[in-house]
Image 1 (spheres, rainbow, N blue to C red):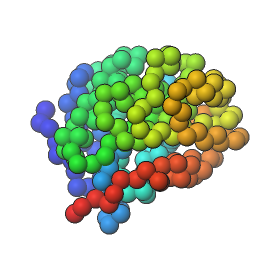
Image 2 (cartoon, rainbow, N blue to C red; image 1 turned 60 degrees about the horizontal axis):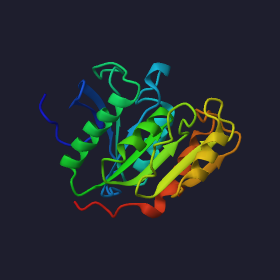
Image 3 (cartoon, rainbow, N blue to C red; image 1 turned 180 degrees about the vertical axis):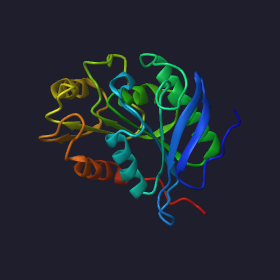
Length: 222
C-alpha cells in the first residue's frame, strides 16, 4: 500500500498498519484557524463496540478542531475497515504508533498531540512513551480494568477528564491512581456524568478546550 500524503480536505484514508490496512478519518480545522499541531485520538474498547465514530471521540475531535488542530481518528485492528483482529491492547499500541509515525513524517514541523477515551486513553498513554507528544488528553481512563501500575506520566502537559458518576470505571480508583503519580495531570471532575457523557457532551467539549487552550501550538504557516 502506498503511503498517502496528509490530505488537504477532511475525509477518510487508509494506511498500512502492522496487522494490515488501517482506516483513518482526518478532520481539518476551518481555514484561517489552523495551528501547527495534529491530534491523534484513540477510541474505546473494540469488543464493546468502540470505533472512531464514538460520540466522545468525535466530540473530542470537534473541540480540538475548533482550537485549530488537525485531528486524526482511526479504527484499531479488526474494527470497521481496519484489518486484523483485537490484540488485548498490545497490537493496538502498535496501530497507534503506525498512525503517529505517518503523521510525523507528513507533518514533521507540527506538534503531536494524543488523546484517548476509556481503553483508548490507556493505549495513548502506552504510546506516549515512544513519541514526542506535546499534549495528552485522557478521558475516563480505565483504571481497575487495565493495568496502570506501569503507566508513566507523559513528559508533557496532561489533562484528565472524569465523570463523577461513571458507571463503568470507578472514579475513586482514577483519583487514587492520580494521587500516586509523581507528576500529576490537570484533573477535571464532571459531576452527574456517566462513562459516555450522555447529555453532557457539550460540557466535555468545553472542558477539553479550557483544559488545553494555554498549551496550543502557534498558528500554522501557510
